[in-house]
Amino acid sequence: MTSGGTQVRMTRLPPAFDLLAACAGGRPATVRFLFEREGLGVAGAPISGGISHGAEPISEDIVSALGRSMVARLRGFPVGSGSVPMTAVGQIPFGPVGTARLQAPTRLVRRTAPGETWLQDVFPSSDDGADDLPPFEPVRPALGGPSAPFATTQVRADPPADAYGRSVSTAVERIRAGALEKVVLARTMQVAADRTLDPVRLAARLRAVDPQAYTFIAPVTAAREAHPVLPLLVGASPELLVSRRGRSVRSTPLAGSAPRSGDPEEDRANA
Image (cartoon, rainbow, N blue to C red):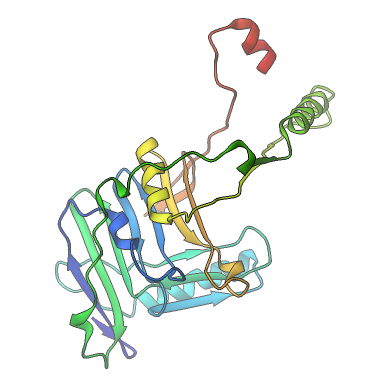
């Protein structure tokens, strides 16, 4: 498939291909991405090159226009017989600072149904070495051996537990007084690591803990210029903010709560 000096190659992969293998390896500054739940999703590395559209500052209208531009660009590529439409990935910052970006990266793997695994390669039409693209690196068994846990002095809660507890009590009092209807409180656990944290290994462990969570790796685009090694956001969430397939829109919001202890008195104290 070719369009505007760019060609796209779609290759069907074995159904057992692990999406994590599509974002393993590469230089430390290589942008990787992953979005997967129970084996379905997209993944790839590197994200440099390919087809890219960016926009800033961030606003609802600008982000909508960005999406329309990318869709129009991808529709310019004819879909080959037995192939699948092209896929783009992107990141949109929560605040107005930073750049919203959508990209059809140089290499991407997508699986939207069991057994339907496709490799998407994007490269210049003048590139005669397209067949020499490097293969995916295998994900090592168990992704390495166990490592020592972080020491207590390496982990710091922000705010500390007692301050966070006071914030919860204040929020409950204001809700009972009618000043608020809902409050979402959170705190950060900061870790001073004494080792290199591999994003693929971390994602693999998160996925193993809860395969039904949405495991992700995404570049932090707002920090692109400030760091020699591009920061990555790695996580696994039980929530899906919103998804759309055809005319069907789905949202899976979940609210956290204190775990049940089996002791009624302790449960009342936690509440």
